[in-house]
Image (cartoon, rainbow, N blue to C red):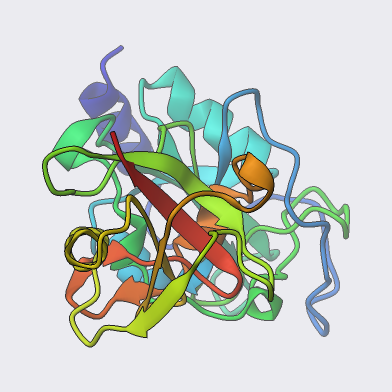
Length: 259
């Protein structure tokens, strides 16, 4: 069955909001779960916690009850979709029990794939709503909050000719991971703007971090590529020069080099 046919079947069989005959939970306290959650092979966290409206506005479709983030990603994958999200629906006058809801994004690659820069991020503590399985360590987003997971590889940002991605996300340190480092706060910072700035200064290595920071250097400290971090940790801050791109996070740097 095609994804569009499956979606028609789901939406025709379920009146929304629907009554979930799920395992009972106490709804007085949202539980803290393990992070990151267990996921199928090749799946990873894309956005730890974001407002549900900013996620749904990008084209996600509601795909039914989710037992866990892993369960949701498997359901989306079976339909050929490679980005999923979970959110928590509390018990109210319509739902019998609280439950986790699975959403799938129909984009699978290229420009149609989900862009984490579009998310309005929220504190991870707001994504601790329990999934409907009754296991407190398994969480499915939060009330009006969603957690996004994907099996898509990160997409390289636009860079000047001759520049390539060296690390999509690396751990920076107070002594800095680039040698002879020069750090500048750029009001229009993007990976391309930073690389251009570094080129003008005679540097062959560049990195963006924490939004406005542009780091230029002559190599890597110790002569080796720094330790990698999770991709989502570099998708925390939007680039001030282009809000459709991300520019690292706290002590999380995206690195580029001139070939």
